[in-house]
Image (cartoon, rainbow, N blue to C red; front, top):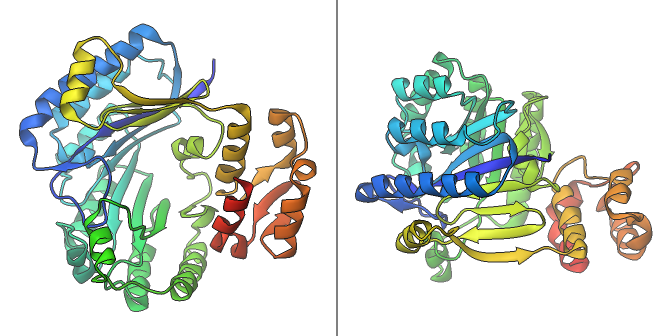
Length: 374
């Protein structure tokens, strides 16, 4: 039986950040009880109707650590009714200011072995600019507690090109990262998502950001500094110590399947991609009618899977194993796409050997290739 990942969405948070367009709702404490009751029922629905072997769990949001521990405890107990005996990775997302020493101890007792902490920046001014409700002092105290209770797999989420986050801020952030010694870092460039407060400001020309060349130069500096700390780039925005690459997230960049539960969650099973409803009332009504709370469902054909495989695998630094591609799809990638691969190879986008992978230039300008291959 194929081993798949399991994603669970917790849509609650204390405050919605200005760049956020996720399914996340601040200050809805009155909805937490009923949401989890429905989430447990959704788990029951899947457990009655499908048999899956799960080897990674990711609890995301929102801010899962925002809700009381009792909800996570019951959630994990319910998830144990799936086949989850030999988990390779069990992550919970958290934000600074939502963790306590007691909560962290209990997470460890539940078998959670990886904390993904939404830092974004250590600079207090930048944090205020983006609507975060914590400070550098709070972040460092939470990290101290994470280590104190014995977590040996800590991932920090950072964002480049936040308002006020200039080169000097990045350098200071990297100095702190050097002291913290995390096992994993996700370092994303700010994306202006439609529906976020920052997107509205940008459209009104009230948001000042770096130009592309400056941002690209700073990212190259970040990559070099992280490499010197033993954090190697393994995906376009992700860095880790050897052996600490995100096992769960790699499923999203490959042919791996993953079951998704909760409001607005998206999954991929048996070549079908689906997304759950994003409305609390619709979610509750469907589940209490004994139906899966799915809003959209799409069968992904072999040709679509092939294109997605190329795009997602090229996100990883190791790229596409050419022999593996041929085994999956039945023909040579270099033969089928010879014209487009030759074109971008000659432009300096690719390394070609046993694998096809992007160069630095290829990563920076990858959208040019993606638009053509689609």
